[in-house]
Image (cartoon, rainbow, N blue to C red):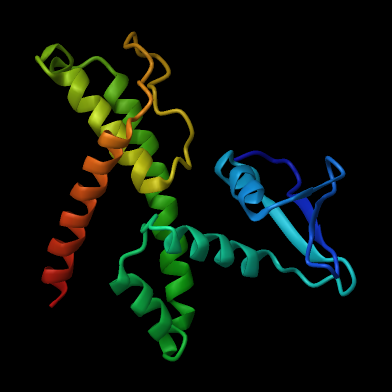
Length: 185
């Protein structure tokens, strides 16, 4: 992340969203792109000054989930709903924040270690395995960390994932989610 100020988006009474940096109107998808690019965003109501950022972030997530971009398993969503009615609500936000922070830190360490010299790099099929792991990490985080190529690696840049690659990763994730759901029971 950068030390920049958050990108200020103002919501007008007409519910249109205005980017104060570029002086133009933006959509929810535009805001999602800013966030994926690593930019912090703050959305405020022009008239009242209320911070609406959480509301719009939840709306972006809901739209992606409704389009079939299922990142959050139903069990997690159910547990989130339950957390609003239990004493756990003070623990859940901290747990989620720490989990995502660990995921971000872990993914960067994994990718860093993938590029370091080790005996596995000469193993046949290593590049294919590395590419699959990179695609998996990117799918798990929605591309939060940007480019997955190891910075000091001599390997060629990662190819653009095809819908077939992403479909396979989604299938693998669904299988993992089912196995995890069975373990919870």
